[in-house]
Length: 416
Image (cartoon, rainbow, N blue to C red):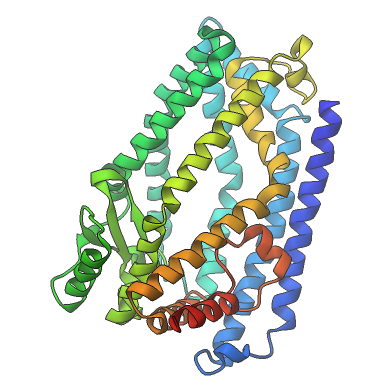
């Protein structure tokens, strides 16, 4: 029964992803010849067509990735791939069951990363390069990859030992103990990331003295927001895309601007973008998202505990795995989970878009709606964001409202 259910959701989710990608391409191609009315004075036809071509190129690559990842999932599960790495780790560490599990998970992560590497290289050095966004070098790309691998290994190896131990020693309530460790680790990483991890990859410099800093500090004072500093990150050394974001929590909260953002927008527009980000904080969106993730994580671990109670190792055997273990249970469940959850993606996307509207309204109240509209238009243009997405594709994937909807809402908010 579990095999059939898995295959049913697998086929449905894969076909649904392909269908949505095709719809997106058709929508973008259909509107490629003209700029939408709301933007025809701010964005040229050449810029609009560049955004369309960029979107079409990304969707073509995405469809190949969907098919590749679908085939890879079948190979790992019903095809016996997990059995192979489990047998190798069992052979190498026959008398150390916990180490077997950690090594098996490491083998999986390494193999999966190497198999996915060609897509990452193509995306960076072919697709992004051809549209003028890539500023990365192969040496820097490989250096980032090695650093990421080292950081992930340093953090995950001891944590995996703890999780495997808890699963084997805490009886039927192991899932609750594992969840508490995961919550603690997640909060710890949120606290540590801006100070200890992010600087390994980028240079963060305090925003220089001047009119922009004074404008930002005045906005922070008006909105009652306290941060641990205003920083500029050298995002331009890897990409031409722009962004601004919050990172950390508690006393480690930081406001970070991409250097590309500060060169593209004027001071008023930067203030409006920051006001939007502050809106997320003031409406509790970040806390809300973290809380939802923790609740869903608790539910997911409980479901896994119930699956492990199936007779005769049914959870493993029905998914093609013949090496049952606590480490394998975590790996197998995390592999198949997206197959079952993807059809429910519109719920998360809908909540995210609702939050974006709220943050925009906050920005309109504490800065100028016209400045945020101007900033967004520049960012749509510089990031080659499509102005004509497919509605159903947006329902599943779009964390932000589309350009027309968002700017129409901002114009309305600016009247009040």
